[in-house]
Length: 401
Image (cartoon, rainbow, N blue to C red):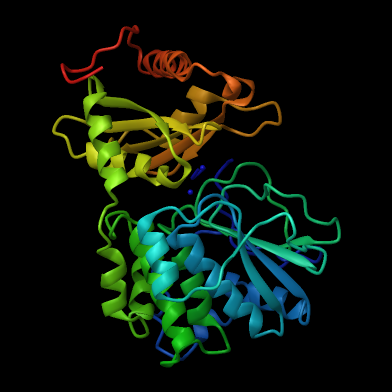
């Protein structure tokens, strides 16, 4: 739910009269590999999602598009948004990229700064009335934290997670078998009749952002699939490798290190599970929760880690990481936390990771933060214990309370 949160949609892409949609799995393994600057003849058919997207963009040529990044901006949705912006411009579509949450992760800030990426952060005076369409990339839902004018329609929705609800747009491409959304957009660029390539600063920027998105969302290619590898091969011709290495080597902020120490002190080990509540966390440090979970998963004998805290005194934010072959983070978190009154799940995920976000609501006004945290921790822990079939009573593994 990035936080980062539906049945599988496996049908081949088809062209529909009312709305052109593409929902499918990856192209077949026997499809001939793409060559730089060329569109393989086997991929020029109108049944491919790339061709459908090109058709949709051409049908709205001359309009204005708002590309929305839901949740906290990360490499995958930043790179995907840049690629969509380039594709739209080839059809005379003017677009802007907007995000609603602060760019908080140190690597993401470095990505935006080093590549000089233009992103708009939402503010109350932002004028949405001039946009005809909007698009969403790398998100499980088409719900936005703002209300757009009724005349602004969903043009494109592209993601690689299990969708939450039925997504209705002119172009919808959801591929659960892709390790990243950036790889899907790299495929669009690879097959575009406008021939993405060359050594211009813009091409280098987009390719580098997409490659970082693939690397980030596949955990350095550990969870990469065929489409991720094909996309990386194509993008490698255009990326700034030195800059990519620099972005990937950003130092870990001191606050994240402090948060990791707290997570270690408060860890609660039950069988192959490790839970850790880290207390109250500032908005700008919330990415540290996921980084803590990544680190704790390296402990011997642990298969699943969940780290959670209260972020910005507004909501409970948690990250799940697992190397279990049987635990499905998406189903596990949805089973634990359920849905809100509108039917939206509080948690969700993909093969090896997930997240949850629960608003504090009325309880955010509680002045006794220590008492509030005791209540939150007891409630969350009991939900976890009940899920894994262990009766509650906290065990801190002898390291802190």
